[in-house]
Length: 539
Image (cartoon, rainbow, N blue to C red; front, side, top):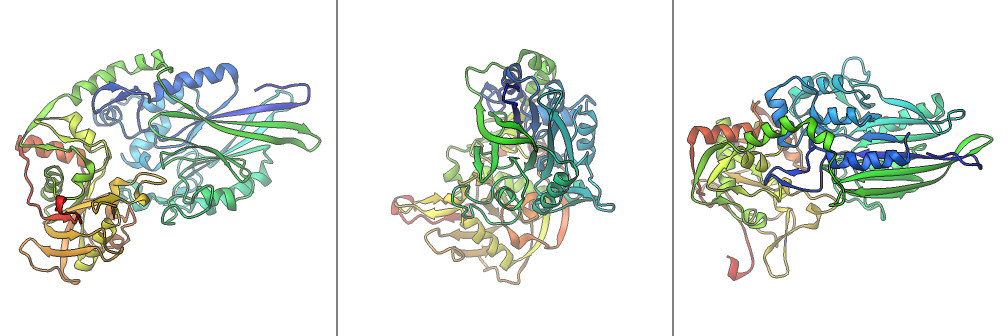
């Protein structure tokens, strides 16, 4: 910030989002260093702070979950400040917003993190279900920046995608109400403008964009999960919109609103600079710029932050390298695409774990990441957490045959028929955010999908394992993760279906327990499903 003779000043805003517990610049699947993590982001922040000492520093959610270090810290329950929150404390963050993954460990863990934070958590639309009052922290804060004798008044409002109840374990959300983020923004922005009369109003929204920023065309099904476009277009009074959740790299302007989204895992730092001029009526915004400061080889990790967690990181690495079982055969994933086109030993294993844990005869599961590599000959905790990075719990739903067919049609939308007849991934699952985790593979039934057929007509075969056709009214108990059971991924047919049972342990724990119990895992599959390829060479 600098004040010049023409009574002008600049306010700099730095933003992190979707850090997912990554502090060290480490790829935990391989233990190799990568250009990511809060320790490297810290170096960028400190360099910026040397140029602008009174900048604003904000985190936009999904901070505490997602890395093995974060999982190990929660699992061991040391009682110390959560490592990611401790880094934000050290870097003097001004505020943070809860993301959807903040709830993955339950409210007790989240509230402890908040209590140990030396900065406020902003949440206007997550309220106490009984009182209607904000359930976490405060809705907004006021900060003053710029000249000491005539400071710029900055309001910062926090919002979180209200779609969380569609994914999260209901036990973790007891007593909370998630109000529509767009409608909440309309009410609070108007109130803040009238009550506080800020010179600059920032909205930190843990959510993304539901429409293409250039054309305005819907880029996803308009469920309300992401409302960034509507926030910019329909809410008067927003100067800066900080977004996240989609893990996109965005730095632009939409209408009069400066917009930033800094990817994920600490791969970039968002930067917005607001230029203001002093006029008779007060400070007036004259220019806004948004950019991303990328973490690359030239950025060194902050040594102090690395040293703060060296013991925890060492213990995490030792824990990850513990062998817990072996594979007889080949359970490696050489190609995620091929894995999704026909029954594969790894996905057969995943479904077997779910079926045994839940006592269900039918299961569906997804390959969660393009980086998943299955299991080699020796299985370690590193392998388990590398393949099961989300702490999803399991739910058993009682479904009818029509529900299963509808779910398979939804899954089949993942594919299109490529020019050579081979199945290819639909662009809808690649842009604006990759959604490979929304393609399910089933066990306990037999089916075939044909991506060359029109959407909604791609299930070519659907029978039980004995070869009997599954009728629309046939009832089956199906186990799946809690995200899917709540309708996550546009699986609307699962919403409101009878819940037979819920399994409280997360999937990584269940997999590790299964491997320890069986010791040697047979790599096999019954080839109960396939995606039809219209090329004789790949039939």
